Length: 261
Ligand SMILES: NC(=O)c1ccc[n+]([C@@H]2O[C@H](COP(=O)([O-])OP(=O)(O)OC[C@H]3O[C@@H](n4cnc5c(N)ncnc54)[C@H](OP(=O)(O)O)[C@@H]3O)[C@@H](O)[C@H]2O)c1
Image (cartoon, rainbow, N blue to C red; front, top):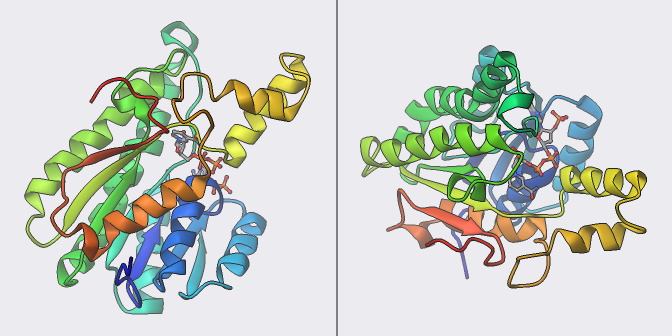
């Protein structure tokens, strides 16, 4: 399917690894210019170089998405390099696991900055450019936790729902010029999951990495965790004109794990 993204410019937050990177790769494969970011300069440089082999141009900008000034500079860098911004894809870092009794007030505010304010700051900075584009879109990467709570992840369960409220509100406020959607990833084998599996093997919960990864497949009808690219391809589709009548949607990409519609 021709997605028609060739030459468009996309800012993807938290994208030097994981789901953000996979989304940037899917978009660059379609010929879009992608602006990727992260805090670790070495990881960012490696991603910038690897994605540079794809069809679109790539710009890496060292950014802490919990810092408003950094996010504004990220969007400015995109405009300076490519002349505008047609699409925004928001991903984020992880937030601390735990239940209600485990978390400090500071961690609640930190999760709000990481998950909600990073998206708010990105959209605020990019909005004039998205509105000036003929094809403006925003796609927020969240989690299946916005539909069904996940045990021991109360910050994700509670705070990410703010992103869905943002998506639903923006899909109405910015229509008809800018489409706004969310994707809800289930388990995908990113560096975050790799670290969790390796830690479980070290603790002795599993004998091998493969066995540990298999345990993440429990309850997934398709019987496996996702490849991050399977999320990235859905992000690229939603940003494209092939999804021209899709806005305000929350699309699970979870191998069928969610039981609710
Ligand atoms: N993987 C899954 O199965 C899954 C499922 C549902 C939801 N999610 C959520 O999706 C998001 C991405 O997860 P992932 O698995 O892709 O994680 P990941 O593999 O650890 O990648 C996270 C990316 O975000 C960047 N990042 C982290 N904190 C940042 C910050 N403050 N400013 C800028 N960049 C930052 C990291 O680079 P630096 O560390 O260098 O900054 C890295 O590029 C997380 O919120 C996660 O909870 C993941």
